[in-house]
Image 1 (tube, rainbow, N blue to C red):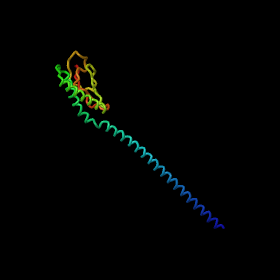
Image 2 (cartoon, helix red, strand yellow):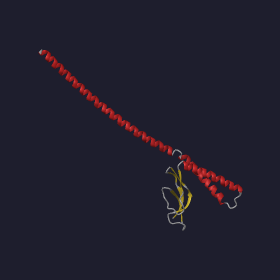
Image 3 (cartoon, rainbow, N blue to C red):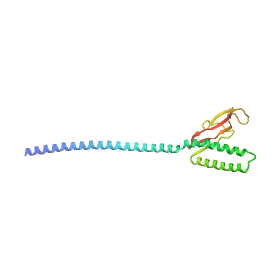
Image 4 (spheres, rainbow, N blue to C red):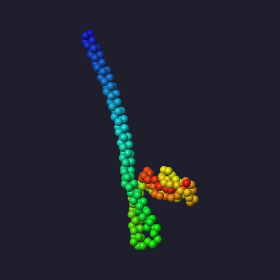
Length: 176
């Protein structure tokens, strides 16, 4: 019987050690699981942040993708404006010139509407306004008494913004 008891004790001892080993292994596996889960959650959060950043970058690209085309249209708009001014300035305008003027005004208006829909804003300073280096490019200075010092005397070209970004400054002449 004593042998039986010893065997039982030995068996119980082995079972306890095995049980402890299994518990340790379970704890180890739980720690690994937690580490993997935390790592996965961090990577998931990083991926979502990356995705948001890429979406913002894409929206910026789309927002300014037509900038080159718009910059190419601005000289055409300037030329149309000059043609309109020259036709309006004629004193003896016949019916033919009047029809040309109406056509040019229509084209000019359509082009302005198109640019406005694309997010283009006109920078149109006025004579006597203060110079803002963010939006105005001073081409030259003149001596005159018509306006205050360091203010705009004449506007040579309008400036333009595309979705708030300066794409062409207004070109001006300033009083010394």
